[in-house]
Structure formats: C-alpha cells, structure tokens
Length: 172
Image (cartoon, rainbow, N blue to C red):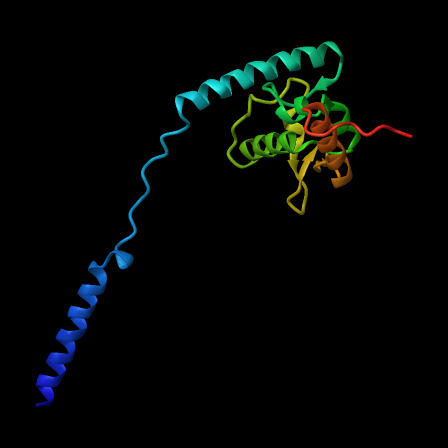
C-alpha cells in the first residue's frame, strides 16, 4: 500500500509540474526579437537634426565659441551655445558629459584593448590619457572630471533659454 501511495504521489507531482510548465505565465522565457531600429521618418529627422547641428557648429566656430575634444559634433556644446573644452580640460575645470564619455571610451580602448581611438580631436595626445591609482580617468596626469553640478545647472539653464523653453531672466 505504501508503494502505491508513493507512485501516486510521484505521478501527481510529475503531472503538476507538467501542467504548470505548460501554462503561459510559467512558459519559458523567449529571446526578444532584434531591434529593428528607428522608423524611416525618425531617421530623416535625425539626419535633419545632424545637418542643423553641423550648421550651428560652423557658426560657433566663426564666433570662437566651439573648441571640443572630438572630431564629431559635441551636441552638448552646441546646445549650450558653445564650449571651450580644450581650455577647460587643460586647466582642470572639468569637461561636459559628452566629452567625458568620449575620453573615457578612448582611454579604455587605448589602455585596456590596445586600440587607438581616432575619434578624438588632433590636439589631444591620446598617450596622455590614462588612469590614476584609484582608477579615475586622467589626462596629462590630472584627473578628468565632469563639470561641477553648479556649472551643469548654469549650462542647462542657458540651453533652455537658447532653445526657447524658458525666457531669460532680466537682471535688476
């Protein structure tokens, strides 16, 4: 009798497991389909935005308000009305988030993967990129930091005024 109880219990557990496994909430997790990317309309708008950024870069360069660390467009620098990243970086005042990301990626490629990054501006000596003993990004043996929060807030406010989200406050 004990043998029959064990067989019945084992069969019951097996059937319960099968039923729970076949229900959709407990179904196996399936891999997601590959991301198809943005729609054609989105791509057209991205290209148009890039063209507008290029035009703004040209104008900011004419006004000596655009000196960046990358060969490509630094959209942060454009949207805040221009930055002199070279001066900020060499003086140790910090850099914008987009520049920090580019420098960090270039240092990683150079130091960890032994690949020279060609996306940085010519004035940057990639051999001067590295890490200090605490693993922080350095350039010319100085720690590279993102701008202080106060400067980021100021730049963000400036950006919002430039794009018309808010009106400039009049000084008294």
